[in-house]
Image (cartoon, rainbow, N blue to C red; front, side, top):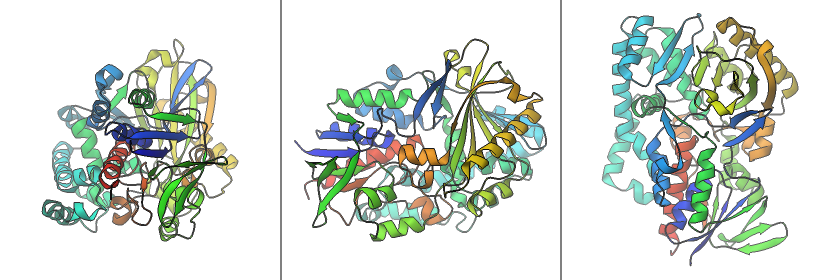
Length: 493
């Protein structure tokens, strides 16, 4: 039987293991943590449950596909709930609006705010759909670094036309073209943060992100987001995948540019195929011990995506005006991104995201309470004074939310947990604690992430958020699928 090792049991590694095992491979997965999921985890604090990491499900067909590959029915494994209100936005001028999954209803909501914006939304999403159909789907589902993929005429044609969509424009510029109201420009600029990027730099083709969300909907999981890796892990085990938790891979062994195996502690284990679900730079520098490799040098020069500071707050009352997902916008969005990407520091007034799963799952909080997952985008870790940054950020977050809601939130926080970029880096080995690998602040970085199959080392493959097609739950799961397809295709060559 063909055998492969996977380093990491994040969603990418879980997806790769399921896709490979379904093709008859003997798969061993090694995970340094005591649980599967990678950045998707959960935490309990004084009777409150919190998802750590991802909080919104999009592209539900991706989840259906991976469970079907494992011989499971996703609807039997997860209770997926389509959110009527995808998000409630608290705008910088004190107004608010709800982003409804019903596009007509959402358009009407926008029209109340700004005359003509309903029609603008329709035109915008039509343009976004064109971009998605031309190249978005291709980039998300195909191994675009492979010559065999690129040589297909249909692929080349789509790539050329996709490259011609607003080739030198940014997401902010394209949003400003379609929406006259700066509040709506800010709302749609926010989608750059879905992959840790700057809307004033990331290419205009990133408008495919809001298209995916508004065309396909936003979803929650009744059992909690962490139920996804838990059920994928169980599905993989049912397929015969072997998991080794609290097992740190010290080295990926190579000889004559070929994989020979891995080293666990002081023991060598023989494999001809190794898939790294770890961060790309960590893989080169630590696991392969090749810090001077061309790929490592190139990757080190690239700008990392943003990281995040997360506050887990147990709140002793309920807020009916809030949805499952809520955004409190800052008053100066450009300054926010300049601070993070140019100065590597926190803005004085950050935009705040609040996710409250107890609105879907009341058992996530005690009676009469809510569990607030409070996220602010943060610069990648570069040995900043995080104690001071977190203290100032906490005060800014409390002030902003309290002002918008008209309630002094600090009086209602009964328990608290904090997650910082250095801790994210320590837990997940992500370079600089970045949440999505490299940023997508250039077209090349956005659409040509690290390839899934190494062309320098035979038998070495990559999946996860720092490799193609990128970060975020559905993309990482697709990364594992693409990776497994390549492994199975090239294993005999």
